[in-house]
Amino acid sequence: MANLSFLQKHKSEVDQYLLEFLREQSERTQEHPKAKEIFDYLENFCQNGKGIRGALFLDTLELSGLSPAQLREFLPAAAALELTHSGLLIQDDWMDHDSYRRGQATFHTQLKTVNPELPQDYVAAATNCAADIIFFLAFELLNRVNNPQFTKSKTLILQEYVSVGFAQWQEIFLSYQNSYQLADIEQIYRYKTARYTFVMPILAALLTQEITPQEVKKIEKIAENLGMIFQITDDRLNIFGKSQETKKAVGSDITDNKKTYYHFFFHQLLQQNPDSLALQKIKNFFGKKDLTAAELQLLQKTFAEFAITTSVDELLFHYQRDCHNAIDDLQQTVLKQRFTALLEYLLERKA
Image (tube, rainbow, N blue to C red; front, side, top):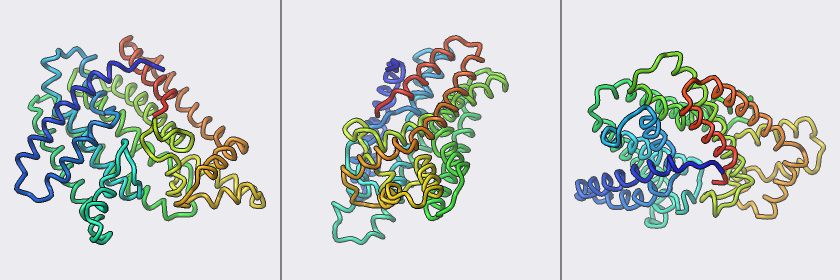
């Protein structure tokens, strides 16, 4: 497994800053009856994530030559990236009906536990209100960065968040469609995950420095490929991973009937082989909320036997090859080493 200690160091810095910020805000807003409910949840939730976005942002700044003192000036922005991600996950978990995330009950699940007498409409509305509060707090963090070089970076960050919102909307729309194209999934992956997770933090850091448009374009291509690989391996872990490692419910993409590359290739194969009893049996597992461990194992076995995993792996190889080629085209040795380490980690990760 690739050594990502350089990211872990920055994650610890962001975690500590964000924890102090959340406690500060909890104290400031204590007159609001629901403040404790959300801040208590966020303290654990934010600490238990991967912290990729904030850490990548700080690491890229450090590679650009910033001193520790200069890096501290940008800590609020790194914390904002992680806080916004937590807000998006809280929304996402509600929309996907997920009950488990980062080793704990999801926010809407906890709301139902605390307020069992209240209807689902309350849970939905309260979850959206909580996400709004988180986003507004993240905006405050972004505004704490006073460096004039951060203006272009902040514009990029907000533009990418707009694209995330549209990708979320498209994903919801697609969930109600029986017919869709591979390109539909690719677009959602590109804007909901790839650009948001890798392009945004890396370019936001680089835009604070002197960098040519040509260099930006090269690095943007690498970062986007890394993001696509991240999402595809995430899908793989959702089906073939272990919940104690991923800290998420394995098989939730199947029970939610989520439109993924695995979903696409399976249903494409089913259309070509409508009389296959084996495939017809697996078809019934999609959207089945009480999917058993034995049924998930049968699905895993069928995906392997019918080369569905091979089809997804071929797409993964396509992005891996493009990423390797783009990395080789870079002139900066230190960036080559960083991106190579990230690529190795993404291909090998188990969580």
